[in-house]
Image (cartoon, rainbow, N blue to C red; front, top):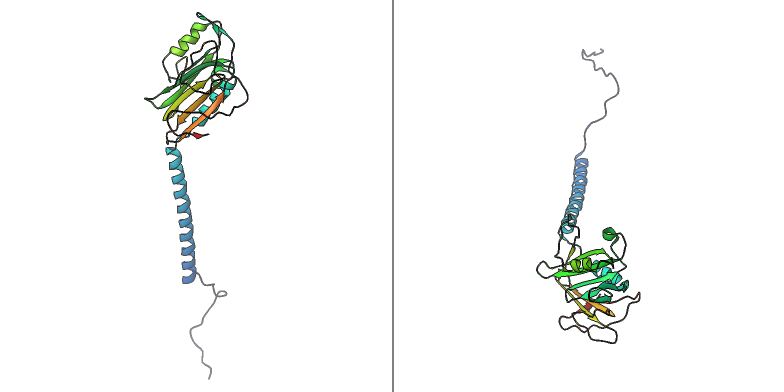
Length: 233
């Protein structure tokens, strides 16, 4: 006797493939995602620390000051200027200030023409200030006024001083045939053979460097300074 079921199974097509992930697949994907997040978090943290250090760090511009002074002294202009007391090259040096004629100028300020360069250190603000004016040997009073004028960092000023932070700044001078250095040069008919710049950076680094005047060649000098233990830069 043949048994026939009244229920018949009907399939419209092949069995559909199983959907979803196994537990191992889910755990593996989670582990990979966590690893990627850790790497990205570490990279972001490193970038933020580097950015913060960059924002807090002030560049040391003392080497730029020393290099500019070296170049300007090497190209010192000995052309006599007719002052009231007589014609002579212009070079006036003190312990923390210096003014002189030079053929090397900052092109962004004076366009590359010969200038009177002036360096002044202010112990109160802990900064050395630099300014220059075009050299006009026929207007000596303009030079005297420039050397006597106060420091102005206002961008609207006709003569602007540019400041570089230094914890200390000293200058000393020596003439031909003299191995001793003094903190003043007031010999109007002569200019010094060499100048020593001694400075201390804001992070307490101490340096000194000797420059030759009106000579393209450096001269070896062992400065004898009365105070401080200086390194050579």
